[in-house]
Length: 200
Image (cartoon, rainbow, N blue to C red; front, side, top):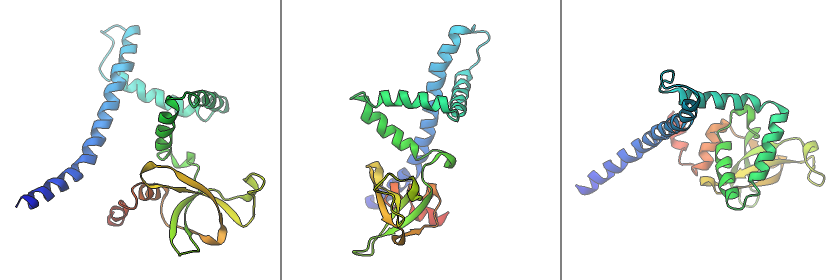
């Protein structure tokens, strides 16, 4: 009896928790934007002209403008210098790098550095590893790595604990019929999301 109740409570929790956490994250982002940006707007605008939601709107506008500016070469160079300075700070560096690497998975496809989802066959035992081609052209690789028979592949580890960048013989690589998002989700969850992909 208690086992039946416990299993169903656990199933309900697993079902509802991702939805609740997603909604809470969106609420937290909107509330934070309203509190911070809305407070700044009130410094320059009378309370009669201010209406709730202007902080959220200002946040969307700021993200849009930064996204537009990131297409400009000079702004990208400036951002790269700021990021380089952040990566020299001893305490902030590992935190920033972890957050940046996590959000890099959600970049628009046009900005993602990966070109193709592939499976690599390990010759010793025939096991297959999912990877992402980061550089298919040998001419773009550094000297000593630009072998025509090899391509550069990134092999992510599950649950955001890093990965390996490897040179792989072309004959050990085969394309995988997965979108970038599906492959990322598959590798990050150690294949737990595979069933959900098949059902959808």
